[in-house]
Amino acid sequence: MSQKRVLITGAAGFLGSHLCDRFIKENCHVMAMDNLITGDLRNIEHLFKLKNFEFYHHDVSKFVHVPGDLDYILHFASPASPIDYLKIPIQTLKVGSLGTHNLLGLAKAKNARILVASTSEVYGDPLVHPQNEEYWGNVNPVGPRGVYDEAKRFQEAMTMAYHTYHGLETRIVRIFNTYGPRMRLNDGRVLPAFIGQALRGEDLTAFGDGSQTRSFCYVDDLIEGIYRLLMSDCATPVNIGNPNEITINEFAEEIIKLTGTSQKVVYKPLPQDDPKQRKPDTTKAKSLLNWEPKVSREEGLRITYEYFKSLPKERWYEEPHGRDFGKK
Ligand code: UDP
Image (cartoon, rainbow, N blue to C red; front, side, top):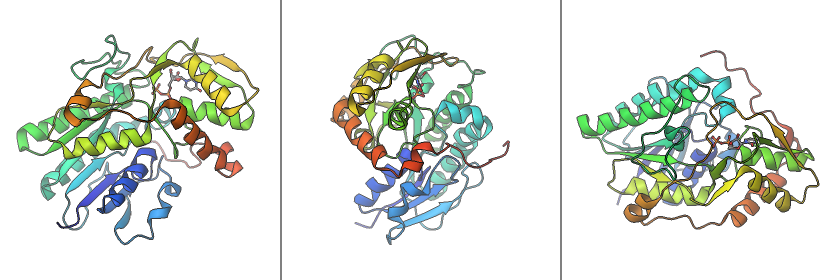
C-alpha cells in the first residue's frame, strides 16, 4: 500500500501538532500548514528532521495549494479561545468560512477525504443537556463568541453542501473541551489559566460563581476519536469529548490539590454568553466508532501539569500574543 499523504492545517497548534504526531506514527507523509498567528513552531519542531514531514507557512483563508497527491485533509486551523476571538475576530471568521471553502475546493481538486474541526460551540449556551448531535443549538450571532460559533456553523453547512452537491467524502467532528500538553499557557482557557496561576503563585480566577460546568477530554482520547472518525464512513457530525462533567469550582479544587498551591480561588465577572453547562452525549461515537475516552481526569491532569512544570520558567510568563497581527 502506498504511503498516505495528509494535509493538516493549524498544524502548529495544540490539536494540530498532536495530529501531526499521530499521522507520522501511522507512517503517513504529513504536510503541516499554519500561519502561526496562534500556533507555535515549538509544538512541531521535533518533526522537522523527518523525511515524511513538510511545513508550509501559509494562511488558509487565502488560496491553498500543495504539490502532489492528497489522501486526507484535516482542517484544524482556527483560533479557539475566547481571548483570541476578541483579539482577532475577523481572522477567526475568515479561517472558519473562507479557509474551509478553500480546503473543500482543494479536497475536491485532489479527490481527497476531508475532516473539519467543528466544536461544541455550535450548541452555544445549550438548552438541551447533555448535547447530542440532533440539537441545533442556542447561539448569539452578534455576541463575542459569535465570530467563532457562526464561522463553525457555516463551516458545517459548507462541508455538508460539498458532500451532498459534489459527493465529496467529508467528516465533521464536534470537539468538546480538550486539554493536554502543548496548550498555550496564557491563552485564557480555564485549564492553562489555573495551572499557570498555580505555577506563578497567583490566585486561581474562577469566572462568575464557578457553578458553570464543562467536561474535559484528554488530548490522546480526542485524537483517537478523530482518527476513527476519519477512517469511518460517517458524513454527519459526531461529538467527541469526555462526558465526565464538573463545575469550574470543583475543577479549581482539583488543580489546587494537584499542584499543592497555597493560593485560593478568587471570583471574576462571568464573560458574556459563557455557556452555563456543557457535556457531550457520546452515544453516536460509541456505537459508530466504538470509541470512548479512556484517560481519567486525574491521570490526564497529572501528565498535563508535569508538562507545564517542566517548561522553562520564562514560558510561564509569556504573553499569548507577542506579535501584532493587524486588523484583518
Ligand atoms: N474560566 C474561569 N477562569 C478562567 C478561565 C475560564 O472560570 O481563568 C471559565 C470560563 O468562564 C468558562 C470555563 O471556565 O465557564 C471554560 O472556559 P474556557 O475558556 O476554557 O472554555 P469554553 O468557555 O470555551 O468552554
